[in-house]
Image (cartoon, rainbow, N blue to C red; front, side):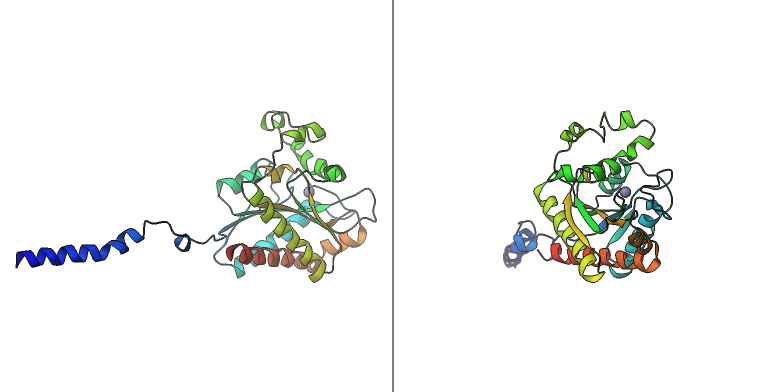
Amino acid sequence: MERSKNKKFIISLILLIPFVFGGFIPNETMMPAFRMKKIVLDAGHGGKDPGNLGSRSREKDINLAVTLMVGKYIEESMPDVEVIYTRKDDSFPTLKERPQIANNNKADLFVSIHSNSAANRSAFGTETFVMGTKHFDANFDIVKRENSVIFLEEDYKENYEGFDPASPESYMMFNLMSKAFFENSISLADQIETQFKDRVGRKSRGVKQGPFYVLWTPSMPSVLVELGFLSNSNEERFLMSETGQDYMASAIFRSIRDYKNQIESK
Ligand SMILES: [Zn+2]
């Protein structure tokens, strides 16, 4: 009697083995699929830093309005995604703090939203940047302008370890992001520009590269969107209107949604 009990016990142990150890054997099909859970939305500038000035608008206000709309769309339509904002009001997070917020939260995506300006008032159109130095010379003006925000910060010399936004040599320290992050950033940037062009009817100036400080330190795919030129009166009027802001925000939202579906199905 005792023996057959033992036998039964041993047999059931043997039968259990695949279930118990199966859980510990890493297997391609058992690896949890990547899920995009957290997105950091960064409304460029803020507080004492107005950003570019149009004839009737300030960049910081337009960036914030569009960013909050993008966030609202994500929160409404993608309940599994947490949206983290670097600012939700007219405050002034430093250029260093913005990507830090993304890194500290272990975010899966960083999207920085800006508006452009140029001395040539006829210039208009959207462009989306990823971290990189290709054709850097052509984009140096805008990179320099965006990075020069650090001069408004106290202790910028200590915080940025001698980084000088106006000196091309300073950019030697910008090491490039990993290939996977770079490719994903390009993929999102492509989708944003396509949405702007095909769905909102904007002129897309394309996907570009630039060593922006905010794109340098995030440890995740990241893009910087330029919604248009406040120096161009037509574009300024469009970006100041609620309809224009809503069109741009929904275009960015759809790109993020498609990007999420795309990388999660990989
Ligand atoms: Zn800006």
